[in-house]
Image (cartoon, rainbow, N blue to C red; front, side, top):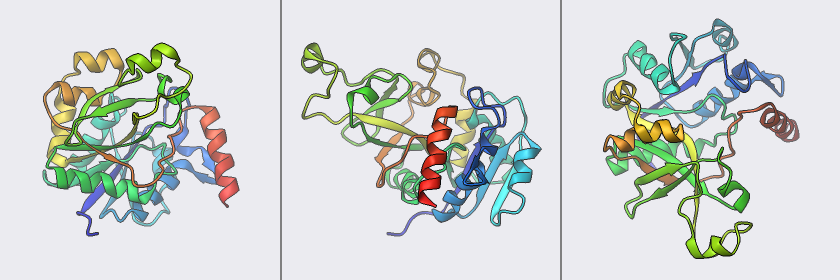
Amino acid sequence: MQFPEFVVAIPARYASTRLPGKPLALMDGVPMVQHVARRALDAGAREVWVATDDMRIAEALADVQGIQVAMTREDHASGTDRLAECARLAGWNDELIVVNLQGDEPFAPAAGIRAVAEVLERSGAPMSTLATPVEDAHTLFDPNVVKLVRNAQGDALYFSRAPIPWHRDGFAQSTQALPEGVQWLRHIGIYGYRAGFLQQVAAMPPGVLERIESLEQLRVLEAGYRIAVQISPEPFPPGIDTPEDLERAQARMRGAS
């Protein structure tokens, strides 16, 4: 399949709340941000940029061929704001497809990264993302796992930390197992947008739903824009948010090497 031309931009902030210095955490002796950047290169991106606020992260990437670094302001409220500044520094035209790959996704599959760009172009939506089936009730009821529902055309209807859709009859009997015949979806926090729309999103004020759920993508839906959702073509492991996540990821990396 011929995939559209796209760039990957990776927000990498040093001062992570739950895991300070996360982009520089070593995995198999290599900083996490290097693993993420190499995943983006493997996906066939025209350019791979890391948008950071810390010279230590820039220095960790200095010897990685094919990676460009944008030094961005320290006071950005979100990764989206950081990437909007990166886009301005890089001089991307408004129609260029930008894939926002989070800096804590060292196992992101190349096919998944490409799929975000492909569904954006195919759907005509200004923004795209990925999802994967929920396989157990624990995941569905975990508020740290974002769930979503789509319409018949594959566009997002809503994102929530709550278990959506709510199976009235099935969950009236038990919430320990998933009722049969329903596919629940876990949101994967990777996004695609045209560079011009990225600037629009960064300029939008936070929405009511975004503030309630603490989910930035709801800002886009509440403003009336489409978000096309593609099921990930390959397993897409969750990102690394906590020291425990990092320990599991390090063990996985050691087992693969």
